Image (cartoon, rainbow, N blue to C red; front, side, top):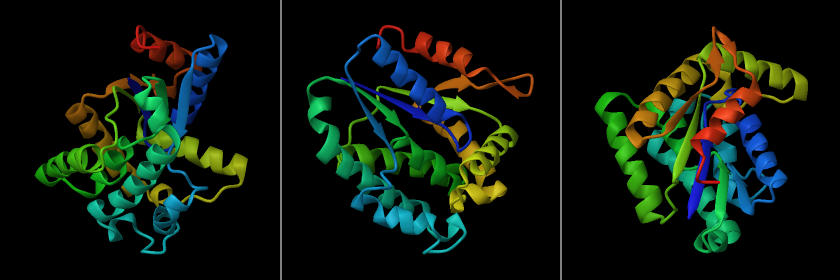
Length: 219
């Protein structure tokens, strides 16, 4: 069974790389199941949508890491049970745009030092042992500095006419997410994929080719 996850802070180019990887698999006729989180259009995301819309406070830190993590975990549990558990148990390839890894990044950002490490341990036990969600086989972390990530987010918002949620508005919080992501990558053994060179975003196809090299023998 192979569960491959693409993870990164907002504005890292993760969704672009996810689509490029899907296109690659489609081109070669590779059978796989794609999943994306959160499932904003599903009832299971009700609490996390309330959270992101500011119903529990406009500062993400007003909802502690453990409480907020449960909102996202329930959404993933519903997805697994209703959508892709059969495919996973058949040993199909599963490709995920975000997963349990996102709680480590976004909720782990609310804690520091030993408290963050304890949270990572709790999170692994909660989602993978208690809730019995499959552990990812490979996590590809899109590594990008905060300045370029914010620039990319604001450009996306301008192009799509979307409004940022409470995770995307505060630069301080986004910096905390980046710090947590780097620590989580080391803690959980994620593959770091550098997305910048000489202070600029790398070409998307160059990043894609590096991802294919990492996944060689898995796809």
